[in-house]
Amino acid sequence: MAVKLRLMRMGRKKRPYYRIVAADSRAPRDGRFIENVGTYDPIAQPHTVDYKEDRVLHWLSVGAQPTDTVKSLLRGKGLWLKWTLIKQGADEARIASELQAWQSQKEESLKRLEAKKAQAAKEKAKAAKTAEPEAAAEEAAAPAEAVEDAPAEDSAPKDSAE
Image (cartoon, rainbow, N blue to C red; front, side, top):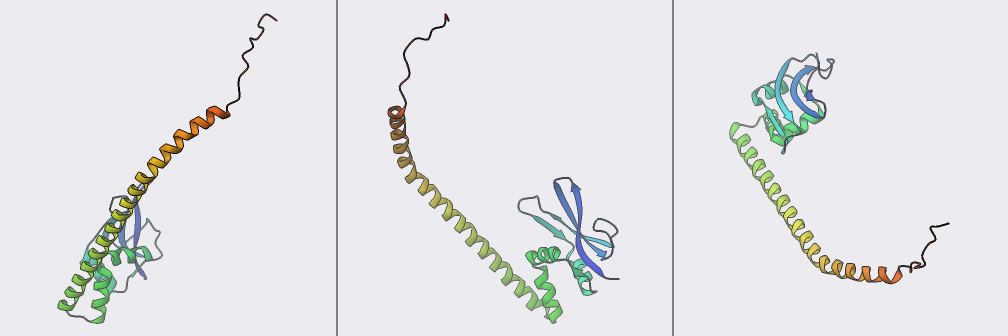
């Protein structure tokens, strides 16, 4: 029996919520499963992924294959790095140091990303301020031109007695 770690859709229409389950690969997506090992909520900001680390590692150790989506979720939380190190036969100290380095690197990249977003917002606000006086000057000139271009209306009275 080929076991896969995959997502099982729960929730309601337009509001998905997933369970991470160990299931036979021949079973339907939302059907029979062997064990529930975690959850994934894509709607929450930021996305939340919770799992039972020991059970996920157990299923991986007995040959369960994660789907691409589950693998990326595990990679985002650092569990896939831990699993790779365990497969290589690393001791607990090396695993802990590698995970610590990975975590600090991830925090650094998040800080850089937020700084980049803040800088872009600052530049956008600055560009909007410099464009504002120019836009006001153009708006002031536009109504004057519109008045000059407007055709003259007939002032002759219309016969309503006909």
